[in-house]
Amino acid sequence: MKFEFSLITMTQPIVILLTSALLAFTTCSQKQQQHVTQPEPETAATTETNQQEPLLTGAAQMGKYLPLLKGKRVGLVVNQTSMVGDTHLVDTLLSSGVDVVTIFAPEHGFRGEADAGAHVKDAKDTKSGLPIISLYGANKKPQPDQIKDLDVLVFDIQDVGTRFYTYISTMHYVMEAAAENKKPVLVLDRPNPNGHYVDGPVLEPAQKSFVGMHPIPIVHGLTVGELANMINGEKWLEGKRKADLTVIPVANYTHKTPYVLPVKPSPNLPNAQAITLYPSLCLFEGTNVSVGRGTPTPFQIAGSPYYTKKGFSFTPTSMPGAQEPPYKGQTCYGLNLTDPADAQPFTLAYLLEMYQHSTQKDKFFNNFFEKLAGTTALRDQIKAGKTEAEIRASWEPALTNYKNMRERYLLYPDSK
Image 1 (cartoon, rainbow, N blue to C red):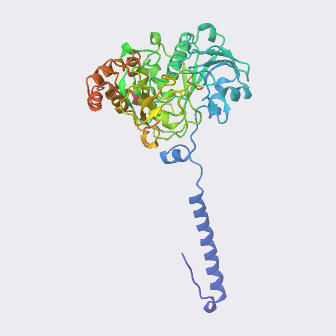
Image 2 (cartoon, rainbow, N blue to C red):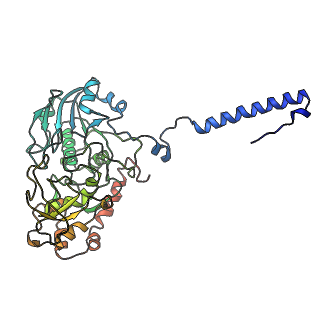
């Protein structure tokens, strides 16, 4: 607002009066402007405010869980993803005076370097000197003598949101052992990079295994904290027990919040492209098709010597995380999905394509396929030439029923 005054024609009292009024108005306007541009800090009461606040994993909110660990003998279920900023949770807790007694490691080991399916041995952490007990191999569940001297078990591992990613199976067994031995469990939650949707066939009870322990779809749309609550609430633990469970939720997060993992969760999921494609491509692990293990782009390509289209090829070699990859030293032909435009949600398109153009259809599937698919129907449907739309129709009503059940356990909204 602009004020103009002709001071020459005004008497002195009027000049003083108007000048005072102008100063008062200007001061008030400045205060109002300061209130608009520098609002008081707000709580996480609105979605817009949440989106502007930094995302904080459960592990990063130490003030919420350190009081639960003080004076307790603690067992940590962790791996290379268990970071608080640039520091591992083990070191973070030790420096905070927490009595960490034992480290439990899932598939791929404490440092996340072992091949998929490779036996991981018990060891000792070279930095802290703490014993590391493997929960992959013959011993997938903490034994009573391994946790008898512990007061609490803490689970902090990054998941990628698929039923067959075995870290959630490890969490199940940790909860089960804790329930059986009356030990509390603390889950430090982390975002799900594939948590913005739900898709795939729901696991049939007969196909239960370490790569599928729960009646959930391939893409379950839950964080590990939400899934832990579902496991408890649906009484999926042995004997229908319930763990004494506490979840520290992620702050300022919704299921639509984009999240790029700061640490690769396993050796063959090196980037966001691989993590996005993983739900679709992992089904190839139950076939004679390579998913690119032993190449720089695992889970971003797929192929075999038996694919008839020769436009794209790769040759797997031995490398860390894939010492003996399928078709080592052999040329494979198939699909190049490294373009960011190929980072699509779960689809059967790649599986159908590779099967339809395989010269070894009779050997395309192996006995692992049903465990990954979670159903006996998918193999038969593909062999019968069913379309993806026809196959998807068979996933109902189980998929919709799961989505309805999921709503009861959400800690975070599905919307932005």
